[in-house]
Length: 425
Image 1 (spheres, rainbow, N blue to C red):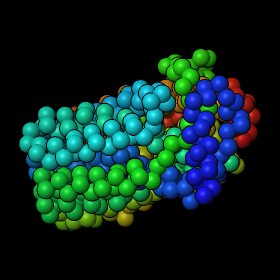
Image 2: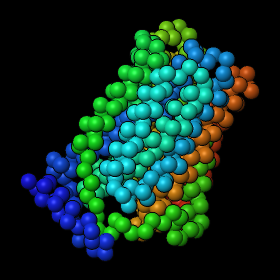
Image 3: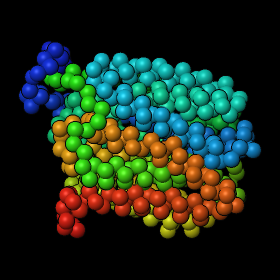
């Protein structure tokens, strides 16, 4: 009853473009609000996780379908998917604000299902690029910024926790999805595996769509700004940090399965143990739920910096020397725990530095800054691997070093905000 009353109030306010958003009431709990979070979590598990499980698919393509194709080329499929999703998300956010979140999420789900289903019949490399790269990235990008933002319509005091819970689905979905896709591929082959996997995703999306509900705050039809109103040195510092750091962030997710097969040849190549490190890396991403608590103590900008810095450090100091299954698992856990912090903290850092005015535009632009690294970062790592004669330390030094460089790019924004070293900003 309470949820219905609030929904009615939200509906009655839809046409009031000039109402004061400060008067907008948030349930901040209740069954209906948490069901919305669950629906967003389910979308996150299946859509946002796709780029994180690509390593399992990439290894299958490299081993069985396209053994003569360089890893740098195959990695580009995942890069194109992530890049297209990021660019589309920036545009889709404004369209969803104007025409409705659920309409865009429905369109995204239908198209994503169609493209996943079509990829089951891929026999050529360009089919993979088209269906699992360009088109799937476009479809998933249409809905991603909307189900990420939807919990904010239902929560105020608990907004950080609710949003973190929804986004954390990417790590859980990546871990479980890696197991599922590996089992399906080894037992059924690509065609049947993708037919089953796309149907599983379609079922999840139908249930998730029935759980979510939109509550448009007053003023939702205000004109969309495609660029931030105020651009300063801090803005460039954060944007450059994200752009540079992403060139090294995805390499472990894309290459850890192939790396495990290379350094632990005693493992059956069709065994689930091969994708064990990828599963652990993804599941450790569940820490996104709790990273806001850490940010309260150390400051969001500091934790954002540590995400890139420690992620790069673990690649250089741990991944480089991981030559046993146990040590690879240790690296996967450490990297999974810290590498993803920046994803959850991006809106918080933007609010801390630039305020809440135009926050959606600024955050959307920062998400767009992911695109170059998502597109080319792992392909560069693959090219380095090939040109160095399969010397994996060259990859770990490059990807780890570039993440640390991304962290250093944030220092201007960090110390222009607060010069004290241990200030919680």
